[in-house]
Length: 107
Image 1 (cartoon, rainbow, N blue to C red):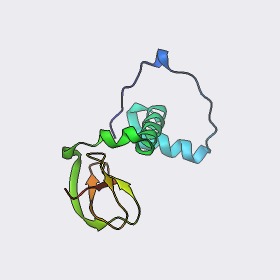
Image 2 (image 1 turned 135 degrees about the horizontal axis):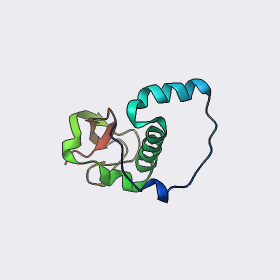
Image 3 (image 1 turned 180 degrees about the vertical axis):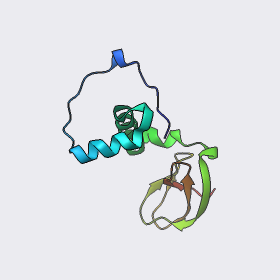
Image 4 (image 1 turned 135 degrees about the vertical axis):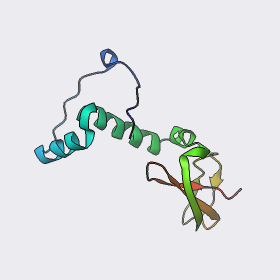
């Protein structure tokens, strides 16, 4: 997962968070040279983007590695176009390079 440069550290606010020691050690191990705080910021930004409407605009066609047919179990929004996909309608699921499955319209 690449580090996303959003703002300089001088524009950031200090926030205190309590983490289990084992979680912190695992995050440090996963982060490698870039540091676990940068990893936590990336994870939080991904969560915000996936949970908000603007997250749909972040997916580009070349981000999709594979896709397969599916049927929507509930209303969805196409990750590429932002078009609605109705419940019980045919759709595709796209696999991104980051390992996420995203809804895709069949058009």
